[in-house]
Amino acid sequence: MDTKFDQLLDFPCLQTFKVMGVAHEQLPIDVVSCLQNHAPGDYSPTIKPSSKGTYHSLSISVKVTSKEHMETIYTELSSLELVRVVL
Image 1: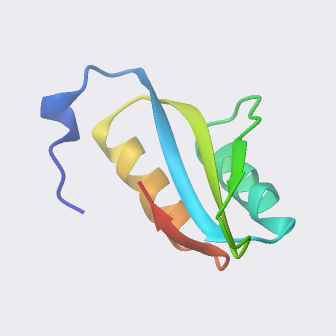
Image 2 (image 1 turned 90 degrees about the vertical axis):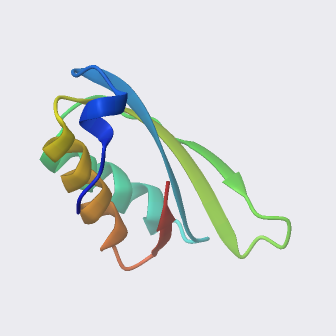
Protein backbone atom coordinates (compact mmCIF):
# COMPACT_ATOMS: atom_id res chain seq x y z
CA MET A 1 0.00 0.00 0.00
CA ASP A 2 1.51 3.32 -1.04
CA THR A 3 -0.25 6.18 0.73
CA LYS A 4 0.62 9.76 1.61
CA PHE A 5 -0.48 9.53 5.24
CA ASP A 6 2.96 10.67 6.39
CA GLN A 7 2.56 13.90 4.40
CA LEU A 8 -0.97 14.57 5.65
CA LEU A 9 -0.77 13.65 9.34
CA ASP A 10 1.54 14.27 12.28
CA PHE A 11 2.17 10.98 14.08
CA PRO A 12 1.25 9.79 16.63
CA CYS A 13 -2.39 10.83 16.26
CA LEU A 14 -5.94 9.62 16.73
CA GLN A 15 -7.53 8.38 13.53
CA THR A 16 -11.18 7.43 13.19
CA PHE A 17 -11.68 4.33 11.07
CA LYS A 18 -15.06 3.66 9.46
CA VAL A 19 -15.65 -0.04 8.98
CA MET A 20 -18.66 -1.23 7.00
CA GLY A 21 -19.66 -4.85 7.05
CA VAL A 22 -22.36 -7.46 7.28
CA ALA A 23 -24.90 -6.83 10.06
CA HIS A 24 -23.77 -9.62 12.36
CA GLU A 25 -23.11 -9.62 16.10
CA GLN A 26 -19.58 -10.90 15.43
CA LEU A 27 -18.56 -7.83 13.33
CA PRO A 28 -17.68 -5.45 16.22
CA ILE A 29 -16.01 -8.31 18.11
CA ASP A 30 -13.78 -9.13 15.12
CA VAL A 31 -12.93 -5.45 14.50
CA VAL A 32 -11.99 -4.77 18.13
CA SER A 33 -10.00 -8.01 18.31
CA CYS A 34 -8.04 -7.03 15.20
CA LEU A 35 -7.33 -3.58 16.62
CA GLN A 36 -6.17 -5.08 19.93
CA ASN A 37 -3.49 -6.99 17.99
CA HIS A 38 -2.14 -3.84 16.32
CA ALA A 39 -3.01 -0.98 18.69
CA PRO A 40 -4.03 -2.24 22.14
CA GLY A 41 -6.57 -0.02 23.84
CA ASP A 42 -10.06 0.32 25.29
CA TYR A 43 -12.38 0.44 22.28
CA SER A 44 -16.11 0.94 22.09
CA PRO A 45 -17.16 1.44 18.47
CA THR A 46 -20.21 3.43 17.47
CA ILE A 47 -22.48 1.18 15.42
CA LYS A 48 -25.07 2.40 12.91
CA PRO A 49 -27.28 0.03 10.91
CA SER A 50 -28.02 0.58 7.22
CA SER A 51 -31.55 1.57 6.21
CA LYS A 52 -32.43 -2.02 5.31
CA GLY A 53 -30.50 -3.47 8.25
CA THR A 54 -28.27 -5.58 6.00
CA TYR A 55 -25.02 -3.79 6.95
CA HIS A 56 -23.52 -2.05 9.94
CA SER A 57 -21.15 0.91 9.97
CA LEU A 58 -18.67 1.05 12.84
CA SER A 59 -16.76 4.20 13.76
CA ILE A 60 -13.75 3.68 16.00
CA SER A 61 -10.88 5.98 16.99
CA VAL A 62 -7.41 4.48 17.14
CA LYS A 63 -4.05 5.96 18.12
CA VAL A 64 -1.76 5.36 15.15
CA THR A 65 1.98 5.86 15.44
CA SER A 66 3.20 5.90 11.82
CA LYS A 67 2.24 5.62 8.18
CA GLU A 68 3.13 1.93 8.21
CA HIS A 69 1.07 1.35 11.36
CA MET A 70 -1.98 2.98 9.75
CA GLU A 71 -1.57 1.01 6.52
CA THR A 72 -1.29 -2.23 8.49
CA ILE A 73 -4.52 -1.50 10.34
CA TYR A 74 -6.35 -0.73 7.07
CA THR A 75 -5.05 -3.95 5.51
CA GLU A 76 -5.87 -6.14 8.49
CA LEU A 77 -9.37 -4.71 8.97
CA SER A 78 -10.08 -5.11 5.25
CA SER A 79 -9.13 -8.79 5.40
CA LEU A 80 -11.77 -9.64 8.03
CA GLU A 81 -14.48 -11.94 6.63
CA LEU A 82 -17.48 -9.79 7.65
CA VAL A 83 -15.92 -6.48 6.57
CA ARG A 84 -16.79 -5.02 3.17
CA VAL A 85 -15.19 -1.53 3.23
CA VAL A 86 -12.73 0.35 5.46
CA LEU A 87 -12.46 4.14 5.25
